[in-house]
Length: 214
Image (tube, rainbow, N blue to C red; front, side, top):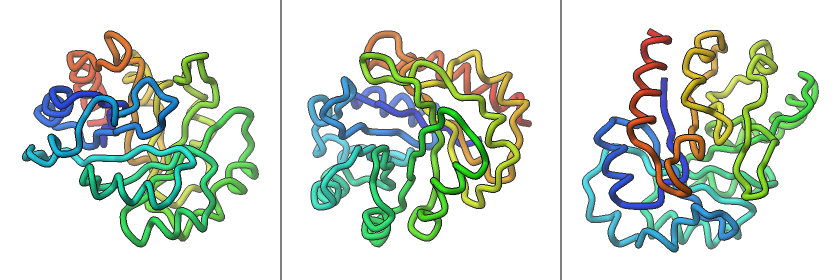
């Protein structure tokens, strides 16, 4: 089970998550987010660290040249596109780096999800499926029903995300099965205060998930 922790806002958080052997750390480059990383972490500080964790830049309808600049400055390993980015945008960026494309789920039917993802099949490396239920602060308030995609043909590794996942959901993940299910993306429900992750919650969730899956 791959674990991505999104909304990392300090070097110490990044170091702690790396020690916990979290697989991916997400840095938010959306200026409208309270987790906006450029106000909190200087890119030069990250380059000094020797880390195994993969760094994911999270963007929302950002200019391609700006995305490329952030890839270089923050030495990103992947990018995650959370807006209405076109397949052409994804294709252009995929020439430089691996791409995760996020799709938001509200009312669901299998034909609709196929319509959403088909155009991105050749230009993205991963998908992420998230809830469309957002708070006034912009964070996801609760998860969508994962079973809605359980019988859907995705044919690309995907994350279940992001803010809707709660620490108590580890046991529910036991009931989710899909051949392309790649990992879980966790965020604001694992914060002890806005922008500050509770590493104890992250660790207990990882242990619970691994116990369930194994």
